[in-house]
Length: 236
Image (cartoon, rainbow, N blue to C red; front, side, top):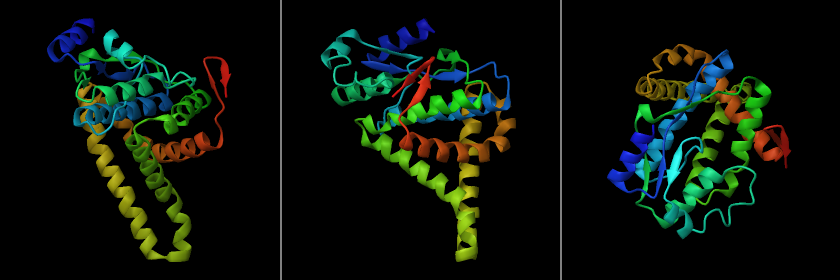
């Protein structure tokens, strides 16, 4: 891991390097779902940094130059949040060093950690992640998160509108569900193969409805409450 990180830095001289994180040693269906979802998130993270259209990362696997950290004032201005120091620092650095942000695309550089074991801890984690989205300096990240939420909300809510608006809504519902299902299948399939986790795709059909419910419920809860539990502490 350290060899790959250092050689990448020596080659590219990036001020900030984000690298992949995966869940492993899954014990139940919820943990398998999180692994599949997180693999997709890593793909979006890498694509956003490489394409320079958004900057995301995970604090479990990143590195940055001390000089660059000091040049942007460290965590000053973003230290009022209980969570989010990784992405907020990344976006702060990306503003000052727009061409010096890199993603280490190498499966062998992956850091592994365990998924949340139950629904309570899973929802607390995702509410914590979602609650800081309004603080992101890059509006593009917040905008795309909002678009994903609205898309999933319409898919879940459209069956309720079918009795009132008939076939047009039914066709729109089936079309959006089909588009999401196909796009996610090929994207997650490619990412799972890259990380050597192709077996996760056996959980794909289970993950499709769960992903819709999770995106909508966490999006709503994160806006209704800013309180969550994290590492045995209640954060407000």
